[in-house]
Length: 355
Image 1 (tube, rainbow, N blue to C red):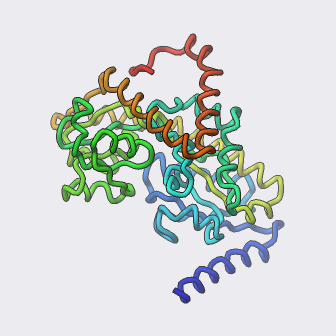
Image 2: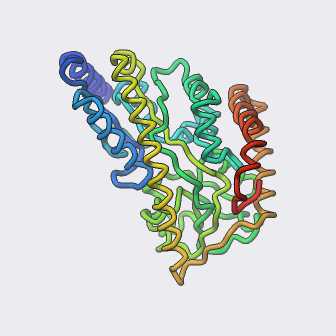
Image 3: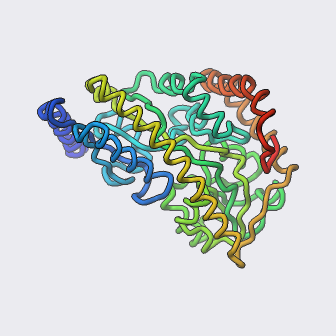
């Protein structure tokens, strides 16, 4: 244990030494890690796009060395690594930290009938969302910057047997995380929390019966269609998902103001790039699924959506009673939706699912 912490200290010291001795007039080298494997569409790719864009915008003054999930620390330890200074930056998803921060899934938008993408972006940048995001981590050596990407609506479930009603969840070994996991437990499912790379082998070995992970393009890349014969959409449990950008606070404070602004601009640009890229990727993936004769694709019924929304509200309300900051963030999201919904509902074409 003593040796392990000596190694951690050495890595932190070396990183800081490189930061100081290179000087701002020459080069700033930052160490960053994703929670996801290299090449994974919509999760890792936007981080790589951001890193390359920062290098261009700063004329090579800022070089961010990006590592894939697990290269330096395990995927679910990215937050702690940024806090401690082992990493200067982390590219991840806020919902992973629910055990430490109960409100974290709200920033990952991982709950039934959460904000739509346009609502979530508006809330983050103009509705006080980013300020609350930073408030959640108050006391930690971490700064939350604009999301480096944004996932669209997820697939609802991959399963070996059809899910036709909420009763089908009873006894089902289902991989998911966060608030949706608590909802499924309320419906009688046995919830198993697994990282992305562990889901396929768990399905293959029968450790789990069904799962949800992400969007069509990501799920296709992971190969769930090779094992499961039933795909249900849409993922009302996660209508969109902002991807979290973390930076060590000491590192951030030492950066020149012009570099900080360029990093923020690069993040917003990468998020925009990711959203537009994902739209086509998900459409292509769903077209592929629909053309597979061995895969049955079905939509949730309006009755199921209504019941899921009700269960979600009950679970959320119980959490809000126990955790004031959770209640504060949830109210902020609800208030923002109420503010923009009257206008949005007038100009928006109907979604394929109801509210």
